[in-house]
Structures are given as structure tokens and as C-alpha cells.
Length: 124
Image (cartoon, rainbow, N blue to C red; front, side, top):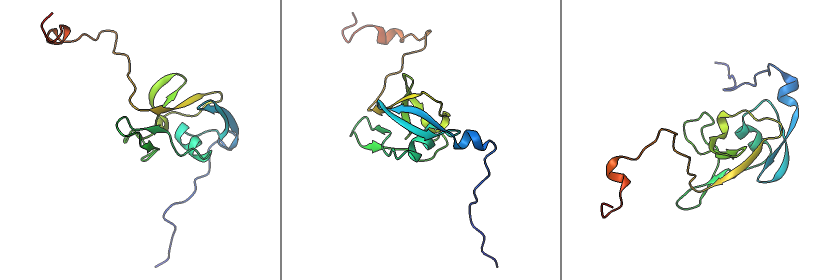
């Protein structure tokens, strides 16, 4: 039986894009990162190890699954919180911030609380 590697490097479809360095900001610090990748992959390639903190304990978190299933890579991208950085392609000039604790997203425009929740505890 011959031994074959479990993984192999795929040739990029557009080497100029994949290899070109683009410039982004992470927590107000400029970074040169490889283009043609997800935000998570680009930040990891730049040596970033802490993407967010958990809401309860403040423990540091970073990408885990790299396919959008785990939500460990949440960051704020260009002012929008709770973005899965593994699902967003990095672009020149992006402003990315680590996410500290829970983020509140605005409710949809047609959101209404149920009648029982609109009053206070005393029914007022």
C-alpha cells in the first residue's frame, strides 16, 4: 500500500487575486493581508488569534469550523455587528472590529412585541 497525503494544495484559480496583499483595519490597526480569502482566513494569516469575547465570561474566541456552523468567528465588519468572518470575503479598505460580548441587532421593521409583553409587570 502506498502512502498518499491526506490533503493536497489546490492551485488558485486567480493567483494575482489570491496572492495580492490588500489593506484592511482590525481594531483600528492597519494590516496587510492576502486577498482572495475570507475575512477569517485573512486575519488568521496576519496572526490575529482573538476575534471576539464571549458575553458571559469574556473568554477569547477565534474561528473554529471555517464554514459558518459554529459562530466563533463573529466580528463587526464595516459597522455591522455579528458577521461570520468565515463567510465574508475580505476586501481592500474593510474596517473590522473584534466583538466584545453580546451585540444587539435592531429588530426587523415589522417587529412588534406580543400584547402581553407591551405593558409593564403591573399591567400599565
